Amino acid sequence: MDDLTPLRFISVLLILGLLSVSNGTNPSVRQEDLIEITPESLVVEYNEENQKATCDAPSTDPANVKEIYWEVQRDVKINNRTWLVDSHRDWNAVPTCIVKFEGIGTLKKSLNFTLYKLPDSVSIHPVGNLIAAENTELQLRCNIIGVAPAGSLTVRWYHWNKTTELPNTGSLQVMGCLSENNPDCDINVVKTPVNVSSTINITLDREHNGRQFWCEAQLNVEPVGQQLPPNFSSPLNITVYYKPTINTTKLPKFIPVIRGYPEELECEADGHPPPKIQWLYSSDKVPRVSGGKLNVSEAGFYNCSATNEVDSSFHQVEVVLKEDYLPLIAGLVAITVLVISVIFIFIYSIYYKNTKMQQYSLKNPKLSTHNGNVAHNGWEQQLPMTKLS
Image (tube, rainbow, N blue to C red; front, side):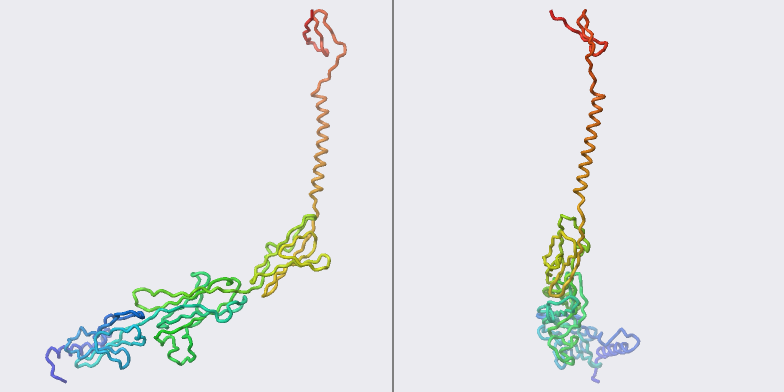
């Protein structure tokens, strides 16, 4: 060992004491604690400038530090205490600070470093035909272009509105990779910007027709001071073909029709493509065809059919004629009213003659020769008469 001054000798003993403690009863003291990296972790965005990390051994006498340098990649030495990040190339960097101490040798400490890149684009595509039938499976793929590191990527699927999140049934895969043994195809290994895809399988029903689907890609790198914004794809409209369903609420199976008053039957059906509606009926053994509306005035069975490219649906209606008794009832009421009126008039006329109209008689009138009064109808009261001169 080289000659040491007392101060340097004490420093070396202190370092050795710390190292012995780290291997002894105090596990919280580690060899790495002799090295200080500022900042402790570094997250840099692609194209971001002037990002750096500094390495030092502040708890040690500088005279006991023989050398401090960075090793960013294997056998790539940077003879400087400060490492300046190249945000265009340092994708695979594993920055390690190396300090050579007098008397105890070389110690190393790694920097928690992440270089990330937001996606250039996010898009959604169908795998196969975008138009599918009900109860079939549709596969959708979300393509994320130019993202790093892909292992920190989360993909979410949405449909109809942003509150409905679909489960991501497919794992992320590097696009264009054919060999699973290729390290560049391992989503958790590759650090450089790559194109990745995520797929989901959806069992379609008629409720999916006309709805929009989209995907969201978000990088999860910490710490960056704030959460990175997600990237959304443009919405994709889904077309689902499904069998027609006839609206039986508006068209019950039994419909009464009053004779002489035709009834309009309307057949409605929901289907995609929009179905063709037809009425099939044969009152005289000759098939007849009508559109969605049909006026009926005869009893019988009428069949509504709804047909599109997927299938057909049928609904049978039975029309039953009922007699219209309203005119007869109206006639009976009119006759009854007339008879009652005649009887009333007859009774009233008799009552009026007997009680309201008095019987007048002019037999044996008595004349007064003294004052010229005449007695009327046998009454005591006399009417005054004025004699003319």
